[in-house]
Length: 198
Image (cartoon, rainbow, N blue to C red; front, side, top):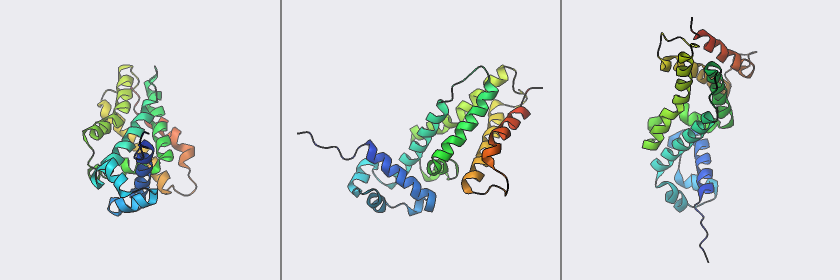
């Protein structure tokens, strides 16, 4: 009779999600492998088997957050309107953050050095930014965006706007009487318009 595999992908993801919640609430120093195992109702042996040690868990945590983020942006298909694609990428950014606030925090509010991502994880750091740069570059070639600055600089300003708004929304620091949900897309469009050629 085949042996039941207990240290499977479902358990790995449950551990990662619980670890993400702990880091989000109390920081990486509060993450204990023994407590994590107890929270998920598994053994510390399972945690060590899946991740090796705490450093391996933290690296896996960052890599999973990055992998899901990259997948979400990759779902935004390029069109013949790159300027609108930039806005659609910004919308996807917010959707990811609202659906995965714990993972979003690991990617964009914590220092990546705490997680010591592997070479694969570092590659995903580049992939997180690349779709936006590519869209701006296509927009420059199409005459939609100014070419006075590098595509990376234009993309960074768009990213910073999205990040700032999303971070305010997630932290509950929206100014009284203002709703980021109501103004997010219009703000992105205003930033994109500001980078239009001519």
